[in-house]
Length: 337
Image (cartoon, rainbow, N blue to C red):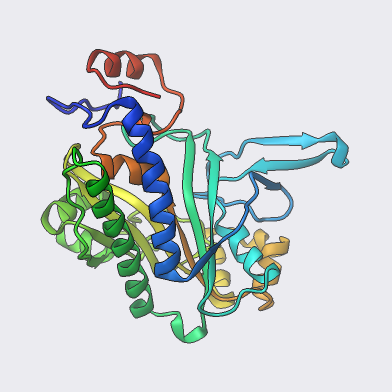
């Protein structure tokens, strides 16, 4: 069954060319606002990493990375990144960043095992990956909330500037953030699925940060899976907006305070992944050789889609789609790049 939704009466607010101009405006403006909000400096990032380094993001633990060997490098195997969650922390040490300072970069990834291609999901992922060095005292919910608020402020500032530059864009992105844990959502909406809970809470409260994702809830289930070796499951979450065009919750960012040695050991054991302790990245972290950090990814195409009021992510990125999706979008006047 095709998963793409065509909102009734939907029409793009901008022409295809004007959409391209607006995408450039959003990307240039937001990365400046984000860098200023969190004290981040831009760096270059890899498209692929060695399969034997442990630096690739394992996401939910079941997705297969795109892999290839390089004969000129002794036949060594490399993987196209899923994200730069671990690489960024490694880079902060190599580049000698200190507490209160961080980096951001453009990340491009291929996620071949995306379960479904629909309005929000593509096998091509583009995001701003960012990471910041913190102190042990910063590993708290208060620091996490403050950082989330700064990111949402940067998004709202960019949205306001966009509407000034492109008056046809009229949707509002509020600055306030509602904070709730995944357990509180389960207690509040026990009869709903996790995605339905997110729809309900964002419909009621608008911009929401759902905290503590990856841990097992009292029901014995998880709100969502998270790899055990980058976020601390007690100190992480997702930034969700309510998407008026699609009438649903819309994830813009997955982020969190990263694991320290104690939480990494605990989460590897809980996830049954203790063999990762022998990988270079994990060894360095367990031995206290990497800085304490907070970080996350912010979807570039998703942010553009939200700010421009687009119905399909293919309107703001050049991806691949099944024949039925392309046919339905063409018939509805939706231009997929």
